[in-house]
Amino acid sequence: MANHTHKILIVDDEEDILEFLSYNLNKEGYQVFTAADGNTAITLAKKELPHLILLDVMMPGIDGIETCRELRSLPGLQDVIIAFLTARSEDYSHIAGFDAGADDYINKPIKPRVLVSRIQALLRRTTAVKKDSDFLQLGNLRINRERYLVIKDNIEITLPRKEFELIYLLASKPGKVFTREEILIKIWGYDVVVGDRTIDVHIRKLREKIGEDYIRTVKGVGYKFEF
Image (cartoon, rainbow, N blue to C red; front, side, top):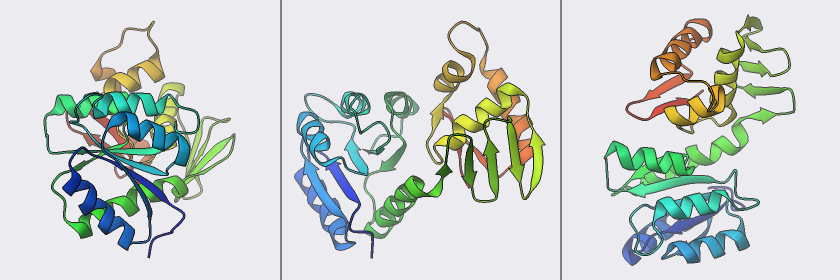
């Protein structure tokens, strides 16, 4: 049974989808709230401060992308997990969603057991990372921000500044897909002109140093950290 303190907000303009998702998540013990449009979702999210939001992309009026962008700008909701519900597989809609602040995608239709498994995995992210001001602890990996150091299985791995900033960014939100554009802006900034090849080289070097298992390529979109 799930932790009943976890609140989930489901946003979709199709009533049968809302009922299907609500039924299966309520059955698992989650507190579930529903909204049929973006504006209602924003109002409800401000009031309830959910742990996770399932958000349909294609909605009349304010669509899922714009709703996500608005949610991310609100106090108390910057760190909420947002997963888009989508029947679309085009790369451009995924990129637009990630750029708006989404953490992940769940494709419709989805089987109940798969849905519950995905929700559990998404919510684990909120408790998986131990943080303080100086380090991240992710399983057998400890990332020391102050010393630009990664410690894996008690072995210290010293990284150049940009490689460290890249691994720290990805590891700060395990499972979240960071687009290439987002990585370029956050690591290199607007003033430095670098190409996609620069990211690829840094990722390759990180994999050589810390192992192949942590950084996953999301084809056509970017990278994410898993452990």
